[in-house]
Image (cartoon, rainbow, N blue to C red; front, side, top):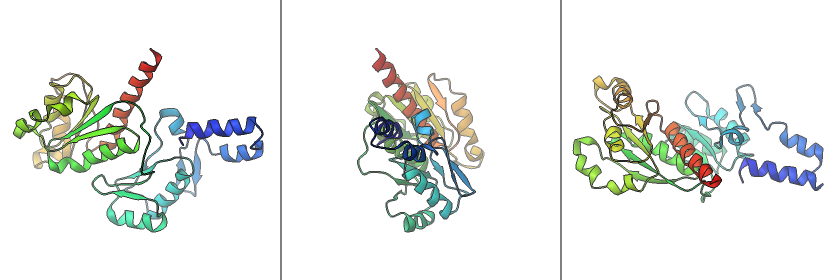
Length: 259
């Protein structure tokens, strides 16, 4: 059950007398945000405002802090996700929260049902230039799937062997929004945008030799692309690209519903 549905159910229960006003107040007192000890304030209201719940940024937090935040969020959200989690940190989390699952390639720990309802129509196609870009691409893919979106993956189709991309043109043609992940010189999003009639979200990665400057070179290539219809997120930000892709699909669905 999503938070908006839970809120509506609670208000209906108060209206019919099944839940007292005092009990409803107790459930709603942390609707906007909930303090967790002295180290966090969980934004429970974010899903109501934006359609996406808050996610936990793993680096810089202790296992105990991550566990406590996940416990608080688990009470109100069907999916709780922590990003950039190492296997060692996940082992510590799982020792306290048995229900947590680990998506190793994406470096994501999550509490989620095995089967998730579809958020809205549409497919997010995710492409990588090389195998070394997989961690960022999988972060985008798992984030999108945990948010209820359909994902199609196409890995290792960079411009150094452009025939690999052209042989899989159907992935571009069948996607409603595309996330293109590339390091090195970062040329792949420009090529894809020249073939696609849908939004292209470019994700530069920190993969590359010294002159790539930790992802700055592909970032600048993507920002300076001559192909139209490209939006660029920050270096290695697979999570942000997935949320933006999801917002595009959700907006399209809302517009379609109005017509």
